[in-house]
Amino acid sequence: MQVAEHDVLVIGAGGAGLRAAIEASAAGVSVGLVTKSLLGKAHTVMAEGGIAAALANVDGRDDWRTHFADTMRGGQYVNNPTMAELHAREAPDRVRELEAWGAVFDRTNDQKILQRNFGGHKYPRLAHVGDRTGLEMIRTLQDHGIHLGIDVHMEWTVTRLIVDGGRVVGAFGYDREKGRFQVFRAAAVVLATGGIGRAYRVTSNSWEYTGDGHALAYEAGAELIDMEYVQFHPTGMVWPPSVRGILVTEGVRGEGGVLRNSEGQRFMFDDIPDLYKGSTAGDPEEGWRYTQGDKEARRPPELLTRDHVARCIVREIKEGRGSPHGGVFLDIAWIKEKLKDSEAHIRRKLPSMYHQFKELAGIDITSEAMEVGPTIHYVMGGVKVDGETQMSRVPGLFAAGECAGGLHGANRLGGNSLSDLLVFGKRAGEHAARFAGANPRGGASGSEDEQVEAATRDALAPLERQDGGGDGVGSYAIQSELQDLMQAKVGIVRSQAELESGLEDVLALKERSRNVSVAGNRAYNPGWHTALDLPNLLLVSEAVARAAALRKESRGAHFREDHTAKDERWGRTTLVVRKGADGEMEIEEEAVTPPREELQQIIEENR
Image (cartoon, rainbow, N blue to C red; front, side, top):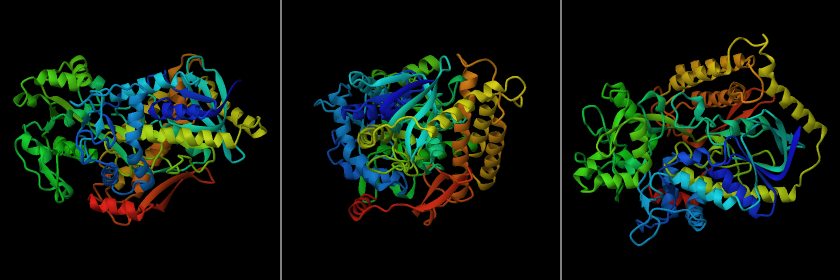
């Protein structure tokens, strides 16, 4: 058994993981960084639109207070207000820091960082690099972090956290290439593993997003919150089938793209929430102005919150006004009527989108409309953490980024994910290093050895069943069935009957998965990797289905066709998921933490 020892172990090498590793290393502790894939392959590179931060470079009226209020409003006021405040206050410094480390942003005429409009944000707030912002973030963080002495373990998957004396003391994992096992001993662990998108059939998420951090934390004794809130990005590719679900950045709409149905109608004007009434309809230019209360806002209805836009698209498709391949049309080419050099403008502002559609779908977005539809993109739910330190209720276990819950509430605003990674990745790394300094690593104990032996047995079990011990069902078949049922029964529009049926199906798959058998050996065996991912996928799917069935209202990304209205009681309630004493999943209602008086006043001023 190989053993690696670090003061702080960071699991996940996306934006949150890299930023945590950088901060912990800067504090003078030894840091190990485990990534399921190759360094640089993090799903963060798929974040295209920009980093939300109130720099006020394009509109001087913007400030952290407005950003905070927008985040709370987008999250339907069930957010953790401490996290929302810290995020809004600290995001500008994190962006400037990234710039100081070498990030190359698009510029205004006076050479400030350029910012664009995005859904749910009152002012142009997203600092961006064309439509490749996430890629630039990862490049910059890697270039900065590579010189800090961080030990990087590439293509390793962690299957279990080791807990001893009531605190996390390390992790157990395997090398995806050869199947070798390794123990990672650490004084503190930071989870930064991303989301759960691979539990669904149509998703923008890459293959690594199997709910690993959520499941690791749950099994170690931490709590999960807000698991019913799963975000469907309104615009994923729908054609050809091989690329269905791949993200079409909100930046297309931020740069003026409009949504139309098969009749050529700009349908988003048909369903503007009361919060945004006062819009003028008709020509796309007129849609840029509408009022929010007594204040003028400069956003088209295509840039309303993602949950709302996604449901409007689903409505058009269900009512027979969809595109030929089951989506709607996203048109950026119309701006040629307004801009003489529109083709060059689109290719400059949206280079990745131009090449993505040109190469994968044979469509020139400078002259043709794209076919798009909703795709699973993000989970607002995650590990319940302290708003300031990012530590879970398990001492020494921290979480940041998408696998941590609280910041986004019922719905995440576009661009808030990248600033979330920077703000709370830094905080997680800082406090993990501080915890490690005060609680140094101990030696191996009998309890640790027992946990490693159990983890080894669990990892080898699918391979040992290949000689008749399994039920004849492979890991791919179970995952495929899970994706179909989650898409159909725990998707964008929900009902009690479908949720209960979906939960029964998940539990049945969970039981069948206990006997999955895999052929071959441990080296180069993706079927084995899938078998080891299944428990995580099934766990997070169960959590989503249970929480969604319990919350009998519609709020943010959670939409119930049998309970379409918001309920005041549920608006004061967070659902907390934990492992019970009998090993079964439990869900408890917990009161939402109200904002302190100063923050409540900011919310009221910006309603």
